[in-house]
Image (cartoon, rainbow, N blue to C red; front, side):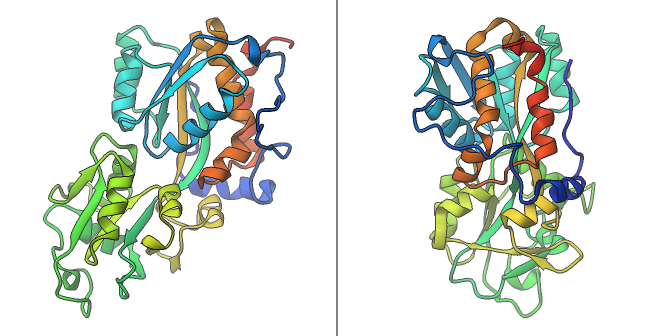
Length: 331
């Protein structure tokens, strides 16, 4: 059965952050660059076959980077795609993938569906921390900080349609909304934290531009001075000066989305954990999956930072690595 180890709120990571001294694993990791990483008894060069990875577009850059480095060592073909967290779990439960990327924890209903398909050995591994980022066009000079309540007013169904309806004194201009599709874990997390977290009877608005592809959202915001949208921190970093991040006031003042604020939980309520899921039977019976997952955890420090997310505190990362120990043998 699933072994959940994630923290229900990122605030719970604050104590671990003090241990981490800035995050990272038990020892500094470096990108392989085609070299040989710590194998722990696994001969990567002997691995072959195919691994299919799907799910969260937020986690996609991490898994893609891991797959690229893994391919330098193993003969295994790793295909990485993104259909959203929910869509990824559907494929995983149908047995179409071996790894499912997720920007939220798997739901009880999804676990039950997996079990109905004979998958009762789902294993959860947290791989990073994200600062879900709210963005506006760089020409927007007024929305530099918004409260959670103002975000709720903007993105809930029947909410504001003009900036002035969010805060008096803001322009009378109509707002254009960009957000992930409903299969996205990013959508689910925002909906839970901002929409239903403030009013459990409310729903997310549906009259904006929705897409599972964060690049489409970034382009929309970049080209519309009255746009507002949200997606993962890494995609915001990739956009550079083309977008402007909005600081969030979760009750203790305006906080920018940064590595440090995500790690400590001060960027509230939009800091969140990121995951991959696999099956215990895959780790036991498919050496290429075990090798890929171990390589994934070994390379997290270097690759998570490289693609723009926050590495796990040392204790939390070691908890994830410990989940693989029963399948690695004595090495």
